[in-house]
Amino acid sequence: MIRKMLVVAAAIAMPVSAIAVSGGFAGATTGSAATDTIVCKTITGTVTFSPKLTVAGYASGITTTTVKAALGGCTVGGSDKFTVKSGSVTGTIKGAAGTSKAHSGTCGGLLSANLQDAGNLSTIWSTSPKISNSSLTIKSVAGATKGGHGTFTIPGTTKGSALGSFLGANKGASDKTVAQTTLTTTALATACAKSGIASLAIETEPSTTAVSLG
Image 1: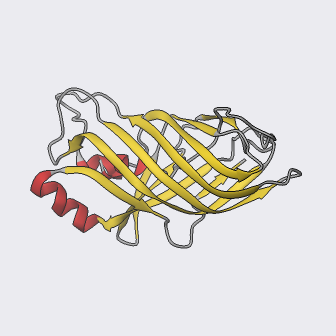
Image 2 (image 1 turned 135 degrees about the vertical axis):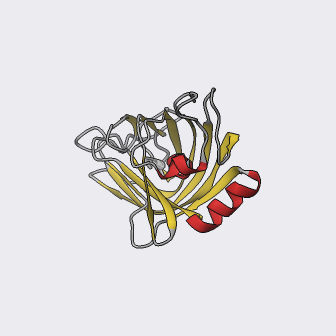
């Protein structure tokens, strides 16, 4: 489940994978950044679980993760001239339904190497001039532990699809969102054992680019 908590982000995206974050819902625009790329150095945010994650999890139903994150330190690459002040990421990710043999909503499940969670993350960019938003359809998230924290990467082994700004030359095929939990895995395990985990804060993984699109 720690893995799943991480997925929800981003990401970090993101992916990441934010998570995570590419594709687009159009708004009033004065330019198009569809063929450009973007790299954001930082990601901070919160993922919320419904129902909350527990040690035992649930023998039926699904866990829905709601992601809210902010991207900073963004630099655009390409022929167009856009100044990106920040990015605001929102979205939901749904896990597989629980069964009597494979419960959903377990804290331990967050550490799974490849969760086939599915959902969508959208990013509203604060730019000059104004450009289209981005959207990323998520089909998997990769979880792990590093430096004592839970980490997640979007996409996992199964890539999603992107729309909107910052698709680059390969239409978002190289998109990647990476983030980590602010709490250590030990602290997460303790919290889960006490009363379960309803939400989780995420942040930039040290020495790692948080978001790369296009």
